[in-house]
Image (cartoon, rainbow, N blue to C red; front, side, top):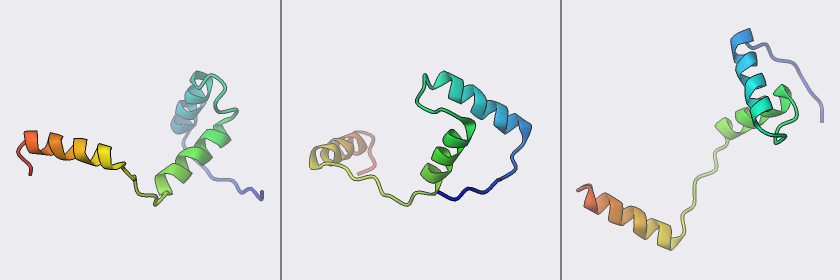
Length: 67
């Protein structure tokens, strides 16, 4: 895959670096984690709930007086 560079603040880089270390091997580099986060943030996928989950959400909303 073709790669390009972006510039981020040192502060953000250090936060990403810390998260990589705490990920217990899930992410191997700051680049990998940053790409994952950006893709997730820009994803337009809508959350799909099962009929059971939808019913539970409705119950909660009813109990709170929203519906």
